[in-house]
Length: 416
Figure 1 (cartoon, helix red, strand yellow):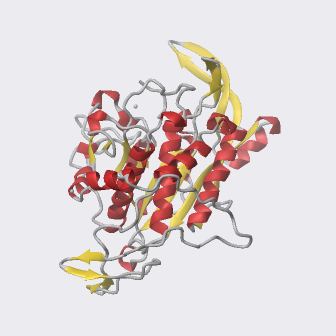
Figure 2 (cartoon, one colour):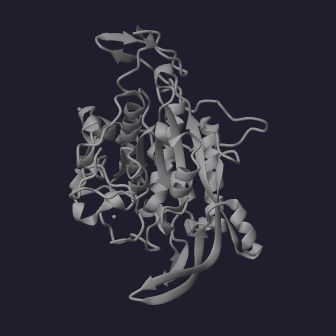
Figure 3 (cartoon, helix red, strand yellow):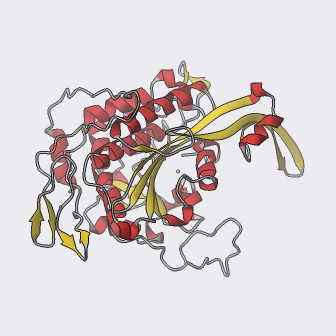
């Protein structure tokens, strides 16, 4: 999060805590000339329930053959083995390693991180639908930034997102910075909602190398937000290995959140699918440590829970999430979700940030994360994403949709 001022549970935990330790992480690699489509999980059972009747699709990703109104019946829950805490930890350790140099937007460490993320999307079999494979290029450069404060002009050098790539021609090449979003797509299967999609995202950037604290100058950002990025990758991997969802799912790891939602703002202006066809956005941010106010390990909270039907829809389907218990922190306005929400799209962020003091410090390291908690939250979020991709569309509650930036609310209320 930018620095502005940020039943299934017991069974999931039991299954995680009894898993065989030492599971080796499978290294994903690109295959020349195409995408690796081999699935990573062998399903022991794929039985799904629709009403009172059980259907058994093929365990390698087949769909139920049950028909309802001419369409294949969709399962109420996505049946999958729980994700491995050791796998989660290994991926997190890679993304938050010192070699990534804090993943500052436009810097070499961020590009190394983007390459790792694209590798995992390719291994999951996601479709590459951006302008450069899995990379969506974002035009950025170092420019002179002018700010007015109390009638005084302040100038500083900093990274800026430009209006388009042609604008780079007006800036010396030495000041150009390569920045990318990383995007993969899992296509939906239901023609009746063929023009609808949801976006599941996290920002992979952090604040880079900075002022040394206790001899450490690399701000690794293991919780913020390498944890959310790994969640997006694991959700994509698991869902891509099973029956296709009704709606298309766009998985996005965006850059520049710490600098003002740069990657998300560029995506909105240059979407890979029409923005008016996006029916929901779920961002995942800082899930590396449990929060007692959410109920402890394996549970998370949702920003702006009271604003739309999304929170209750998910909770009613057994997803262990609760409303944000710290509304004074204004977290709903402090992550990438707000940019989508201002467009009228029901958009929220799932988190378990407990206000730990490692926030935006070099001590936000992988060894301080709780892999069992994080894996359990990912398992819960798999179910949340599955429900959003297959269930009813969430809607804003009357008068609680956030206003667009150019909108002038009447008596402080924006119409839905």
